Amino acid sequence: MIKYNLRCCCPCSTPVIIGFVIGSLLAGIALATVLSMYLVDSSKTKSLSTNVTTVTTSTSTTGTTTTATTTTTTSATTTTTTSTTTTAPYCTTRVTFDDISGQSSTSGIVPNGYKNLNWTNVMYLNASTMPTSGYQTITTSPPFVGYNPGGATVMITTANGTKFAFNSVVVSSAWRDNLTWSIYGFRAGTNVVAGSFSMSVLNKTIISCGACSNWDTIYFISSGGTPRAGLAENGTEFAFDDLCISFGY
Image (tube, rainbow, N blue to C red; front, side):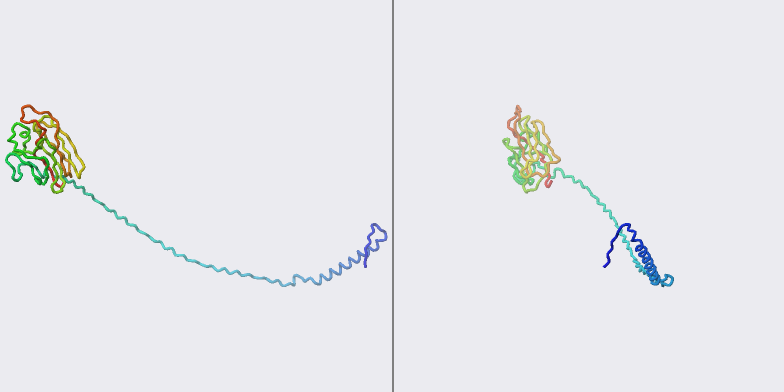
């Protein structure tokens, strides 16, 4: 067993140190010789070259582009609207009270069905039998006129259900001046037209309407007025003639 006792600056240690240095040098020379024998001269070493060939496979993709062309054809349609104006006929049925079947030569009741109408509180009268009265004034188509006996309300309706247009009527007060005379037009129970007018004994009044259509009932009502002096009677009767209507309008 080897033990190293190190003493600092001891004069007796110098030979040992020299011997140790010489030994080290000899050992280094020997090691260098061995290494020189082991190392191979690089000039005699065969260098291996590894060639790496890289093969690049090129894939060619051919794309076919199809272009679709759509042609849109716009067809223009021309619509022609023809406006037709139909003018309703005027007075296709004229009521004169002169052509009642089996009528009396003086007066009588206007029967239902006359002129395809039904009549309530309407009588016919030969105006020549009442020369001093409104009956004479009103006469348009002699000799007969219609009137409301006793001043009763007149109702005229369609006899066969066919609607009609009211076109016109000629009216006069029989005995009073300033008599209030009113007309009411009905359709299926609804009052669609109403009007009131002042009548006198010596003048006849024409009542007309250009748009009174599709009626089924007419009312004539009279009231008021002042009795005209010198006449035989003084009631609220009125006379009417030439009632014009048009069926189907």
